[in-house]
Image (cartoon, rainbow, N blue to C red; front, side, top):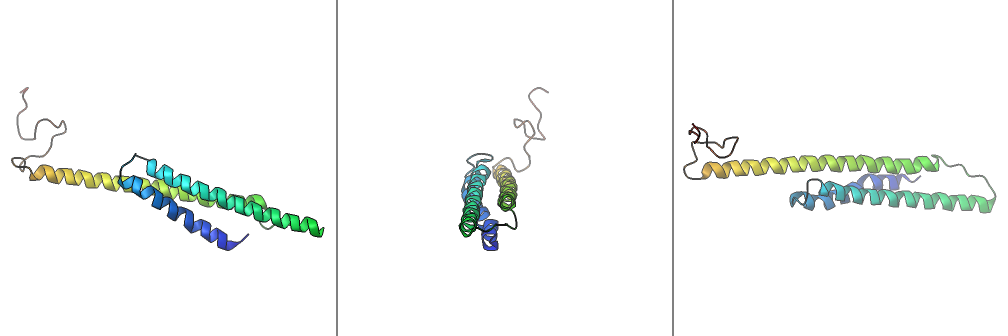
Length: 144
């Protein structure tokens, strides 16, 4: 198992996944569409890394068969594939957490902007929005 490829698997998929997800988060395409797109990119990378590792294992096995010697892999092929799978699943988890954090930040920013605009409107400086949204605080409702 080549550690260079493991290091590439640690950095490249998450970077590309976040680059794909970021525009979807900032444009508010959907609640979780950015995270889903980023996760899809990461999982495609995982499949590619596993396929590359499988090809390497097959090539070594063929050379061993041609030389009529026994081959022993350390770590075993399944463990090699599982390493890439575990890296990918951790990266997908990070992308979903980043999506939640980004969406929460954008929501709070929009709420602050809306509150600021409301406070700057003429005649609304002394009042704050009520929970029902129709009668400002400090005034009597029509029913009373």
